[in-house]
Each structure stands twice: as C-alpha cells, then as structure tokens.
Image 1 (tube, rainbow, N blue to C red):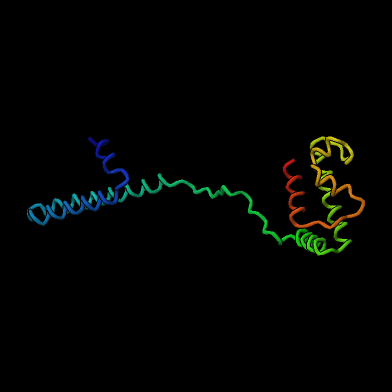
Image 2: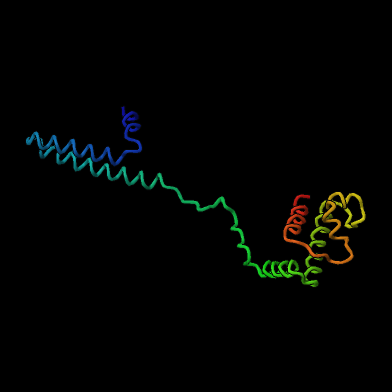
Length: 165
C-alpha cells in the first residue's frame, strides 16, 4: 500500500501535500469536535512532510557538471593577423601585383609540398604520381616559368584540390 501510494505521489509531492492539507481543512471545518485532535495530527503531519521534503531535496540533487558538446569555439575569420595579411596579398595578386602573385604562388607551392609529403608522394612536380594528385590545372600553375595572373575562382579550386587530396 505504501509503495503504491509512493508511486502515485512520485513527481507530484507538492500537489499531494496541498491536497492533503485541503482535505484535512475540510474535515476540521465540517466536524468541529475533531478540531483539537486533528490540529495536533495535522501539525505532526506537516512537520513530517517538511522533513521528508527536506530529505528529498538534499538526496535527489546532484552536482551540476557544466560541459559543452561544441568543443572549442571556431576562430572568427579576420581575427588572426596572418589571415588578414594573406587576404590582402591575394587581393593584390588578383589586382595584378607581380610580387603578390609570386608570394601567393609560393604559398600554394608550400601547401602542395606539405600535402604531398603527408601522403608520401614526391614533391617533384615532374613526377607522374604527383601530377595526378595535383591535377593538370594546379600542376600547370606551379610549374609555370612566371607567376601568371590567377583569379579567385582558380585559387579556390587549387585550395580545394589540396584539401581533398
């Protein structure tokens, strides 16, 4: 009986306490002869109820663990000075600045060599396996005698090729 009553009240302890107090209030109001006896009973019940509520509050609360599934926040583009310098260099290269074109080609070559080395391929651009990995457009760009003008779309395609392979 007690277990069934506990399951019935579980999760609604406050509502059950208010309901019990209301029922006892109605009984005391309707039968004045039970006034003193029920007042003692209700007082004892309230003390027991407050004790049970206090035990429940202390027992059921666990320490809150503050974690996040997001991991480390991403850096905002442009917050790194190196990214800003690179963006300006690319803008200058697209606009036609010869020294900026050389610098951009040097950066793309460096990224290509690092990617090829990570895959165990030779950084020699005349190697067939290296040319196959880089593709014809990127190989032609890196092997050209002079740093030819390049568009943003071409640079984007080169970087995509380097990231995918």
